[in-house]
Length: 332
Image (cartoon, rainbow, N blue to C red; front, side, top):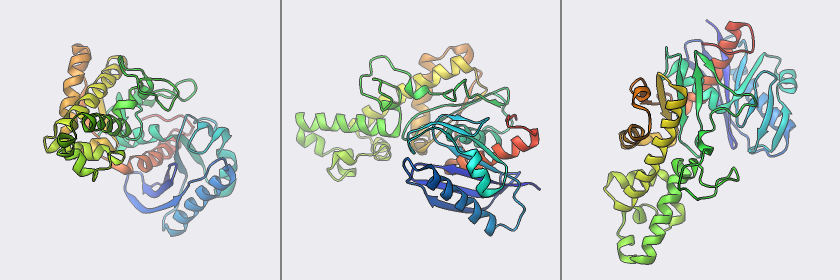
C-alpha cells in the first residue's frame, strides 16, 4: 500500500493529511498561514506541517501533493500569481524540496479539489468531468479524457470571471458584472443585502419583518449566503428573490461549461452547495433554459461528495497519479 501526504494551502490555514492510495485519511494536521509577501516563512510553515505529519505517521511516506491558490505552473513548481500571498513567478518546489527531502507535486488548489472528486468522490470512473466550487469565488476544474486541463498559463476554468449580460457590480478581478459577483457565496450575500437595504428605505416595517433581518440580528452588513438559504427555506420573499437571481446566473455559467466542455458529469461543490436540493433544483432549471438540449441531456449534474476534504484528497491523488505515471503529467 502506497502512502502520501496531501497538502491544501489556503490564505489563512493549510490542511494536511497522510493518506493511502484508496483515499483513506490516516492522520490530519493544520497550520496557520496568514503570510503575505514572505515566501521563506510560508515555505518554513509548509515544511513544518509536512514534518509534523511524517513524525506522527507509522507508514512510509513516498511523496507530497500540494494544492496552492492561484494560477500555477505545475510542471516547474512555480506560483505564477497568488494574490493571497502576494507571490508572482515564485519557485516553491526547489526550496521546499530541500527542506523536506521528498518528491513534490504541485497544482492550483481548484484543480487538486477537482482531482479529489474525480478520483475519490462523485466523479469516480468518469473521464470527462467539470467541477465547479461555489464559495468565496467561482471557478471550474476540468478533466478531459482523464487529464486535468490547465491552459497555457494555468488560468483554464475561470468561469467566475466571464461577464453575465446585465450585471454591473464591480469584481475583484478589476472588471464589472462577472458571474461571481452574484453566483458566489459573497455575491449571494451582497445581492440579498442590497435588496434588504432597498426594502428598509421603502418599507421599514416590512423589511424588519423579513427572516433575513432577523437572521442577521438587524445588521445587514453581516448577511451570509447561509442565512439567505435558511431564509429561503422559511419562505422569505426577499431571500427568494436574491437566491433565484443567483441560481439563474449559476445555471447560465454552468450551461456555458456544458456547451463548451460536453462533460459526462458536472459536480457542484463549495460552501453554497450545503443548501442541497434548494440550490440544485433551480440551477438545473436555469441550465435547461440556456444549455443546448442535445448536450445537456448527456450531462449528469450532482453535488460534490468530499466537502472540505476534496483539496487534501486531491493533492494526495496528484502525488499518487504522478508517481504511477513516472512523470509530472497527471493522467487518470
